[in-house]
Length: 191
Ligand code: GAR
Image (cartoon, rainbow, N blue to C red):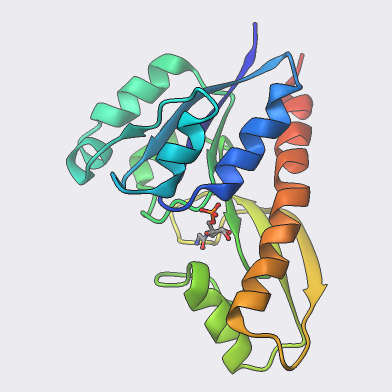
């Protein structure tokens, strides 16, 4: 039986697309669903061109158990948050222990928590004149950005780097490492 990845994304979806490309070449793994809370998210068109139909859901479906039970039926091996911005509720964490993985565009525990996503993170990193930033891949628990860390990677910053430069450096790390880390988690689970 194939291992199943479910993707959640709220925005542009470049990470989701990159993950799909990576696993196109891994026969034992399938992308079993792509979900977004944002009906105008770029991820929808990006994945359409790969033959994948992203499903849009609203706050009710996310919170009342409807979406949760649909995803339970699919028996995912991993649920991957690739730029997903809603907080994952307790019922999700309990239903999928050590199964939900998030990527954060900074070196947690720095620059995590509510409101810390995308450009807000890079702006805070720049405002604080950090000399390095990076990515954190972690399990999701009840608290924003506080689940067990699986992987981190740093990148150096130049004092003149704009927030766009910082975002580009971080995205590059994400594209290189996120699919590989997901793959290694799947291999760990394999019988
Ligand atoms: C990524 O940089 C990801 O780390 C970040 O959103 C971006 C999504 O980019 N996630 C968070 O900030 C979560 N707190 P993408 O839509 O192009 O993949």
